Image (cartoon, rainbow, N blue to C red):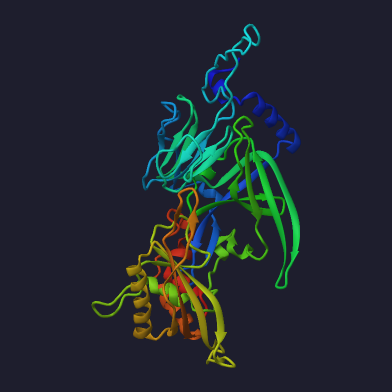
Length: 465
């Protein structure tokens, strides 16, 4: 006999039929996912993903947890209600307008017939839209800041943004799930999920490489909870035959179907070096041949005299900025490297050394005019202090517009361009000095990695020259 728990966990009729179809089509297929932890090489900012040993079972770390929004229904017709707070712990969420009028909690209405005695019966009111605004109380119609959410549609809450919901009918039910930072969550090292796996393959022949690309779609019968709790320093990578893949998004949820579609790409052959399954074989080396190590060293530079400037915000290599990084921060993009010597000079150990010039664009987020100016003065001071780089030209500080249509705002984004001269040997020397300054604390609770990651002697031995 079914229990109360069975009744509560049962899928709606449509979802039950679709779940049975997925099981039949996939032959009860199960996909395995393994947990990987990010390691950032302090020498050049390169990202690596190291697999957490299965023997560990779980990893306790900071992450995310789900909680309900501030409200689940409107109170008064045409009156907005706040559903998401403004706060540092809330980092996003999802608002969903139910598809059916029953799930919206709307009652039947009596329609007065135009001709007495004809069609004289109560009819159900149709499912209605809700209206969402992230700047203030929402209107009952679309405006410059208020967006209509039709029945069955969902909308993500961007970051730590507050949100308001309005509807034409009081008592309109909806769902709000908030993503909140949690001091500790337990992530299993291995996860097996039942569902259906789809993929396509395409060979891309480029001038520099021939790469096989695969787009993967995994239809899960239930929401994969560890994926919701995971923080930016962890990643689940799935395996199917000889394909390894990671997800970058989740498709729109149709509540009545109760199926979850996860979309991603297989790991490219050209980026497979950044995924490490055996940490015992991991020996990080300096990858960059340009001035990036010098710029990364600026994060830790302290002048040897009082009153000197320090870097006013954290710098990251371009394309490797941490997710949801607190403002302000800057990214370093080396647009071009050119040689200023016709041939490199070989050292005593046959290491090549060449005088080069980099065109470097620094993109700054959350930096005021004063802070951006302080950064420019800091770079000039650093150049004079140690001559690691020589500044050929310094561009003007410029504003760059980046909009978010939901808020009708632009981000506080600025950029400045430098052209700097440097010797490649100096860049390598700075990287070696950087080892002594680096704080590699990305792997708490993983004793298997301690000898590889946390010991400066081992790390310096892994970097040649």
